[in-house]
Image (tube, rainbow, N blue to C red; front, side, top):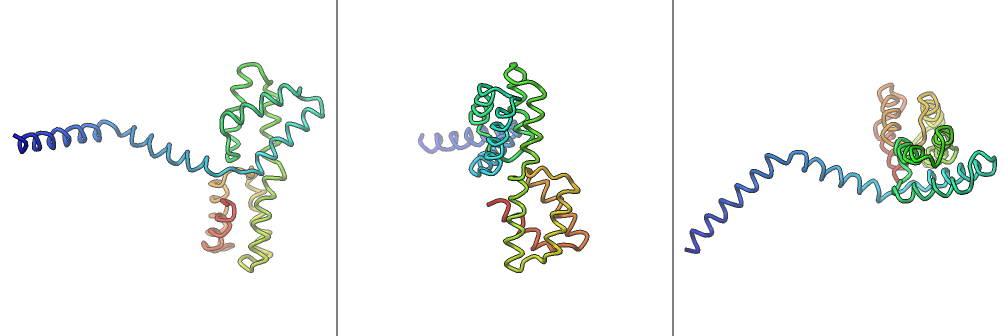
Length: 190
């Protein structure tokens, strides 16, 4: 009887597994997305978070926002676990505050634009390029070309993937090697 139980148990387990695999394509996709999302939250861009605090404080000092609104934005960003990577995600978080009437559309736009173009975010790229130039990985001309390409593409200082695309264009045009592109990307991800 135990042999039959083992066979039936194995067959039942295989049937359940097969049904789960066939009908759960989205579940598998969701699981992988959660893993990627968790990995993204393990890294936090402190420069972007500092830029947000600076922008909010400046808006309070300029009278464009009340201290209560500043605190509500800071609290919403903290509760949403914004990691500093992604101005689009910041825009979504602020959109919820706008929808509730906590901040206005003009305030939302001003915050997103100011954080996206903050010197703190772009300075991160400059620091990486300076380090690589000092080590002889990049020439001074290549450093200037990367900064120029980022400005021409209106890179927001957040999206590492977008920066990768910009650097990929420089590789295709022979300005950078693939190894140099990878070195810049590694420096930005740290």
